[in-house]
Structures are given as structure tokens and as C-alpha cells.
Image (tube, rainbow, N blue to C red; front, side, top):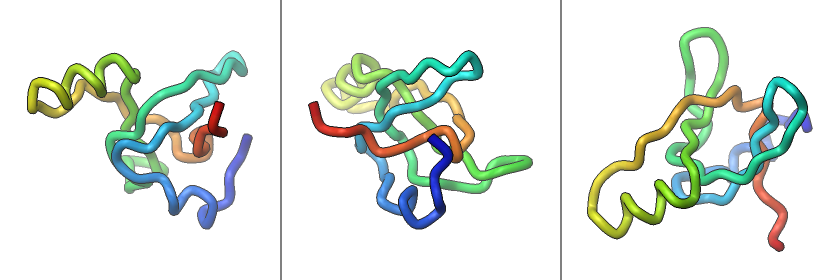
Length: 78
């Protein structure tokens, strides 16, 4: 799922994304940020859809974790 920078530029806060785990699984998440500089490589901060919805409903930032941008892609609509 390696992505070119141009295709990742559409990722922004709230976007549905698919992340690839170290063992090759693909999981659906919500982007909390677009692609930003991490310590060593570009990242996208992501959270679960449940956490995103709960945070939006209660007016706070969702708990999120940085994910390597090369392992994040826009989710294909179901």
C-alpha cells in the first residue's frame, strides 16, 4: 500500500483512512491530522472511528497515535 506523496495530500482531519499494520493487516481509522513531519519520517495521527465519534460528540480532541504516512491511504468507500 505504499503511497506517493501526492495521493496522501488529500488526507486531512476526519478523513476515513486505511492503515497497514506491521503484520500486513489493514484497519480502518480516522485521520486526526493530515501528513505531518514526525521525528524520523512523515506521519498521520489516527484514531478509531468510535473514539473520533465520541470526541466529536463531547467537544474534545480524540486520543490518537502517529502512524507512518507511507502505511496510510484514503479508505475506499464501502
